[in-house]
Length: 101
Image (cartoon, rainbow, N blue to C red; front, side, top):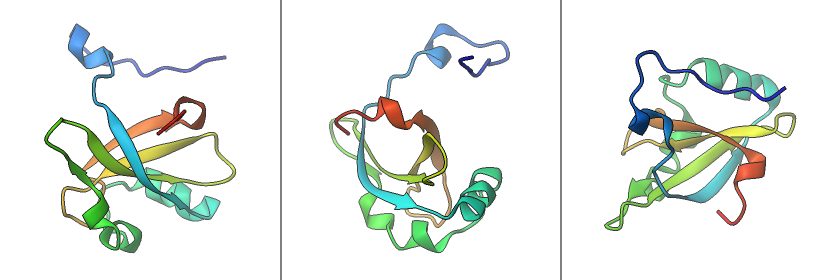
């Protein structure tokens, strides 16, 4: 069964993915560390701090992000920290949707 996110009182623009992105680095965590991360996205993490320079939005509006994932899952969390040590901006993505990124 396929899953989706429902948004309360959403507008059309809320439902359509519109941000282009480039994965600058993949951070592959142990599964227990990944579960903690996805449950506590707003905590500071060393792996985010150590890669701050890779995350930004360029002049063409492309989001340069890190992908945080684990071998045991078929998805990841894209992170653009905007210079901080936590996932200030984040997005869920299926690994099958990564294609050429």
